[in-house]
Amino acid sequence: MSAEGGPKQLGLDASFAAEGFELLAEEALCSLCTDYLDDAVETDCPARHVYCSPCLQKVLDHRQTCPDCRGAVTKMEPAHFRVRSMIERVRWKCLNFKNGCQFIGTKKELEKHLDVCEETESICPFEGCGEKGGRAHIVEHRKGCPFQTVPCDHCTEMVSFQAMEKHLSVCPKLPVPCPRECGRKPPRGEVAFHLETECEEE
Picture 1 (cartoon, helix red, strand yellow):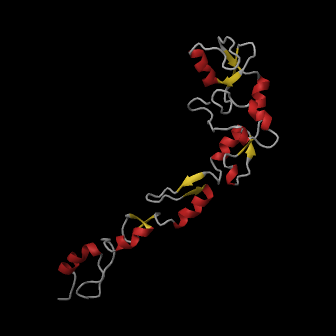
Picture 2 (cartoon, rainbow, N blue to C red; picture 1 turned 90 degrees about the horizontal axis):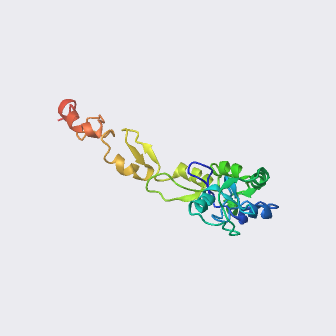
Picture 3 (tube, rainbow, N blue to C red; picture 1 turned 90 degrees about the vertical axis):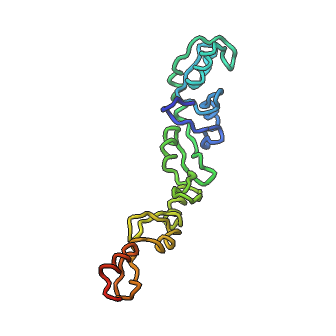
């Protein structure tokens, strides 16, 4: 478990352990929150059990015994450096490995990878669209998404692809033929002005 603003809690469990790290992964998980041992600390119980700092702090706050051996707990200390080193050495598969991602790395490397993993589920950002899929799929989808907004060629309004035809039917800046067929094409919103001041046809 990670404190706010600290390392990300990813919901890791032994099923995400890379090949050859399955047993070590079991030792790298907090038995209280069942997630990765970020900020690993140990109790002063006889067995020196290890937990993540926020979980053990709750035990101390409630003056409880060690959750594993029921021994007395009066304080917590940073886990031995060898324990921390072992935890940090464990290598994990990407959370999206079932979707085909081949990444394998440490917890810190995994956090960075997830920011760019092409298999991370994303949703199209355009309002009205609900398309979901891997990051790479959404990148391609956005190029032709009918809900993508683009500026009208005649005015400054941003309009979605699928609504462009309807917009052009009322766009005040779209040039339209003079109703008196004088040959000019004033903007739709200025037709009345054109008829009163410019049109030479009766």
